[in-house]
Length: 407
Image 1 (spheres, rainbow, N blue to C red):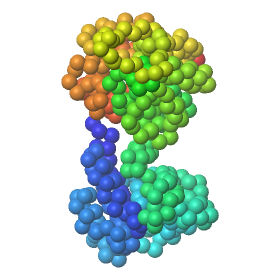
Image 2: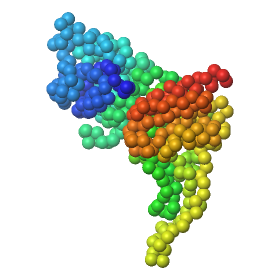
Image 3: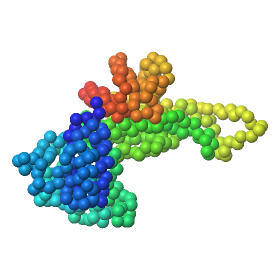
Image 4: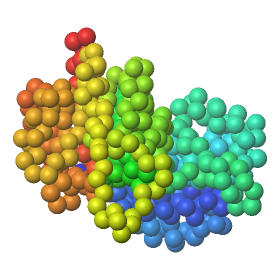
C-alpha cells in the first residue's frame, strides 16, 4: 500500500502568485492516494479559480466563513475534523502573521486556530518580505509553537527580482509532509548511505561505469530522513535532485567514495546502508591525453586494478554498529547473496536479480530478498522503491534497537 493511501489532507491556499502551484500539489497527493480537502482564501481566488481547485481535488472548495457548506455553519471546525495533516501552501506573509498572533478573521485562520493536528507551512513571497524582521519573528514564534516549515528557495521571483522567496519544489513539500506523518523510529541515529554509480576514468573524456541511476539510494535516504535519522549521503554521478535534509558528499570515483565513506563512518555513524553500485575495478593508469583510434590501433588492451571494498571495510569496523549491504545479481541471486553476506559480514543484505522484470537499475520498482545475519530470509513482492525503503527502515530500526539494548 502506498504511504498516502487513505490519508486525509487539508490544504489551505492563500493569496500569492504561487497559488497556481497548489494545483500540482493537489494532483501529486491525489495521485499518491491521499484525499485532499481544499480551503482557499478570497485573495487566493484572485489568482486561481475555485473551479480549478475543485476539479483537481474532487470536492467542493471552501472559501467564505459566512457562506458555509455545513448545515450547522461550523465549516472551520468540520474542515479539518478528520485530517491527518494541515498544509498551508503557498503561505503569504499575511497569513503567517495572523497565525503567529492567533487572529481568526476569515475561514482560513479560524480553521487553523481550531486545528490541533500537525501543520506544515510552505511560504512564498518577495525576498524582502520573507527576510523582513517581522516575518522572521512570526516564523520563529510559530516554530516554537510546533508548526513545521519548509522554507522557500532562492531564485527568480515573480516581481523580476532574484532572491529567497520561491515556493519550495512540490516534491520537497510532499517529502516534508510525509516526514511529519512518519513515526520517528530512527530518531537519534546517524546513518551513512551510499548511492549511485562510480565513474572510473580511462582518459580525460572516457570512463568505465554501470547503469545505476541512484533511485534506490534516494528512496532509502528519504525514508531514513522521514524516520528521524540524520543522514550522510555519499553519492556518485546521478541526475537526481539531492534529498532535502541530508549531509551531501558528491563523488566521482570508487576511491573518492571509499575515502568519504570511511571519514563519515569514523565520525559517529550508528549504521550504514550501502546501496551504491561501486565499480569493482579501475584502470591501473589513467591516460593524460585522449586515447586516439587509428588504422594501426584496431585493438585496445587496458590493465585494470581492483578498487577498495567499501562494504567489507566498513563491516570489518562495525564495533557494534549495523551495516546493510546491497547486491545486484544476474541469476542465482539468492545463492550468490548468501555467499556475499558471509564473506562481507554485514547484518542485512538486500538482493535484487537484475534479470527480473521491473527490477533493478533505472526502474521505479524493485523485487528484493532480504537476508538477515540470523539466517532469516524475506522475499518481498514487486514494490515501488519508496515502499521497499520504508519497509527496510523497520528492519533497520529493529536491528539498531537490538544492538543498543545488548550494548
